[in-house]
Structures are given as C-alpha cells and as structure tokens.
Image (tube, rainbow, N blue to C red; front, side, top):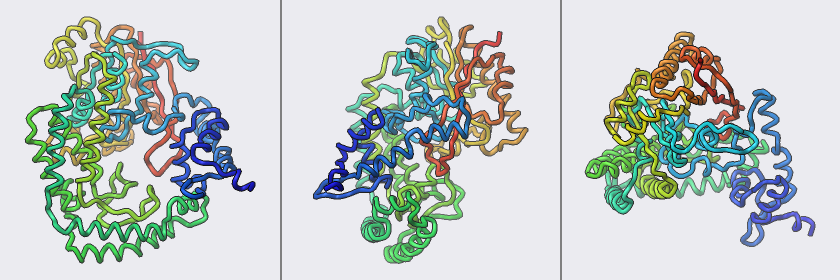
Length: 529
C-alpha cells in the first residue's frame, strides 16, 4: 500500500513538482523526464506512474546544482537571470524563429530583454522604444529583426550571405495565406506522386520492421535510457556491438532491393551528402518550386525545401549541425539511444515542414506590427545604408534619414568557429546563389591564430565605424560575443566607442554532445567621446 501511495500520475507529478520547486512544471516536463530515462516509468492499467521518491531524488540532485556548478566553473559574475533556464525549447524557438535551422543564433528572449521595455529587478534602464530604428549588421537568420518587428520597432538587417537574407526575409514577408497554401499543396502533391525507384518503399518498410524489432529487444525505451543515465550499462561498448550486429541485416536488405547509395568521391555537395533517391527527389522538387510565379510564395517554398534537404543529408542525428562523413548505413544514434538509419526520401519531411512553416507564419502574422524592416545582402563594412534603403522602401528611407538608427543589437561571428556560407552549402548548390566566403569575418577556415584575430578585430571595427555614420549621436550598441581572446576592448577603441557595461550569461541547451559550461558576454557600447 505504501508503494501505491508513492506512485503519481503525470498530472499529479506535475502538481507535486510545481509545489516542490515553487515554479510551474508542466505535464510535458514530467513526460520528458520519463521519456529520456531521468526517472523510472511504472505502469498500472493504462496509466503511466512515477515514484515520488524517484522524482524528488532527481530534483534534489539537480535543483540549483547547475547554477552553483556553472558559477564555480565560469565565475560568480555569471548573470543567471540571462540564462532563461525557466523556458522550454518551444518558447525559445517560438513562431518563425524555427523556420529554418541556423548555427550560431541567439534566442529571441535575449533580444527582447535588451531592446524591450522591462521594469523588473534585473534591468532598470530602457534602451529602445517602439518607433526606434534598430540595426543588426550581422543579421544571420533574422532574430533581431523578427523581435523588433513584433515589438513595434523598425529594423534593418545586413548579411554577406545571400541565403541568410532569404531566411530572414521569408520570416517577415506579408503573405496571402490562401495563395501560399495552394502553391505549397501543389508542390507536396507533385513530390508525393513522384517515384524514382520503385524498390525504395518496400525496402524501407522491411528495414523499419527489422529496426523496430531490434530496438525493442536491445534498446527498449525508456528502460535503456534509464540504465545509461545511471551508468548501469557501458553504452560505448554495447552500442558498437549492437551496431555491427544490425549492420548485417541492413547490408542484406540493400543487396536484396538493389538500393543505390551515393557517389562517395563526388565533389558536389548534393551528390556527396545525399542517398541517390533523395538526390533525385530534391532536383524534382526544385523544378516544382521554380514554376511558382508569385515571388513571395516561391521564396517561402524554397526555404521549406532547404529545411527539408538539410534534414535529409546522409549523416547521423548527432552530426547534423556539423557534418563529418556521409552516413549511408544504419548506426547507433547517441541522440535517440537506439539504431537509426539514413533517409531515403524527402516526401514525409517536406510535408512535415510545409505544415509546420505555415503554422509558424500564421502565428507570427497575428503578432506583427506595421513597423518597417529591410534586409540587405551586403558587406556591413562598406554598405551605404541610406542609399540601399532608398532603393527598396521610400517611406522607410524618409523616416531613416529623419531620425537615424537608434542603435545596434547583434551577435558578430566568433573567431574561427563557423563558416557561414558552408553551413548552408546544400542551399547554395541547389539554388545557385553566389557565395562570398572570402568576405566573411572570422570564419572557421581562417583559424584562430594571431593573424586571424588581428583581421577579426579590424573587420568588426570596420563594421562599427561604417554603421556609426547612420546612427544618432547617443546610440546604444549591444554585441553578443564569446570573447575568450579579449578582443573587444581593442575593437571598441578602433571603432571610437567605449564599453560601458558587460553582461556575462550562461548558454544553456546547446545541441553539441559537449555540454560543458559555456558563457558569452553582451557588451554594451556607447560613443567614445
């Protein structure tokens, strides 16, 4: 009887945890703990139950531990309020912010915190107001512009990557939803009915059946994850053993159905990183997109296709953000804790992303304001912002010249961490956009040596000096950076600015397997005079 009283339903566990932690813990939060083996699942009839002692033990071991540990590793000056650790992933990827994957972007709440009107205990000063013009000279996928638009502020985004500008623009464009839904439906229907290899469907059906049986036997969820969490099993050794065991079944099926994989020696990104059937479907889908006449509908359809083909690359789920080698066989997935497979068709993914994209656009449409925005594919070191805005939006141009830019909120590239064009190489290959890798500031391929750091300092300073020409005298500049080389004091000096404040924040929920404590700094700069 005692054991029965200790068992709670998901709903009861949600209430108990909320009371225990003194903050809202949803039923989905509890389900997550069960799904990923953080707490043991008990079954009674058709209900999922959780032992209250197991749940309490988890929260007591975790509650406050991360903040204490991170401050011990990264310093007591860590501003935990800027961790936004109370938010769920769906909050940090709300509406159009998850329209397309993008490495190196910050969460929208960070933008909102600094450009919004806050009156909480953590922030007394208001830097921007509705009607101000905000600039992001490294606009990436457009997080700053989207948040500014939602908050009634005018915004300008500049990026050297043409494809980045397309992602940003499609988030902000006004759509005739009946029209765009009709166009996307046509593309979906064409892709669904297109067949390049009649054996693919039968092959995948048999493969999935074998995988399900194998995973249920050797990687039962959530029991296996629970054991891994508690180190009751040597995951590394066990995974290698079972991966090899199932590979025999996979090879037999590939041979049985005559499945063509890919061209391992190909130099072209699309030929190298996609299974042949997927490669053919991509070309066909792009032909359907090119038939769309309305430019807005064509752009958003292209972004849906790009998001689709990114997910369909022949790689492991763990390496999706940073490609290593093409993965054309089944494998043990460190993310899902079971045997997974590469993708052999884009059909279900295009359908899924099309539905998700339309939902996100409609959600954001209800939040949009009548503020102006402009997205400029240009080099922020040299672009004449007044001239470029005049070309694309006369009304915005008049306003801009009258009141000028109030300030900047941006995250410059980090030294030697990301090649921004290369992360979307599949899109550049497919759509034929001109790549301008040589104009990136601090790209991965240039490394992090003394020469690369000196070039980076000059590059960021050049951007700030150019942008300063179009800003009000009392401007506010916020730069989000991981400045482990202590480069920003020199950057501020060369740009004729001074650092007036620094906010050091922990970066949580990173997608990499390396979850070591990591921080970044938001530098607040003003006029140097």
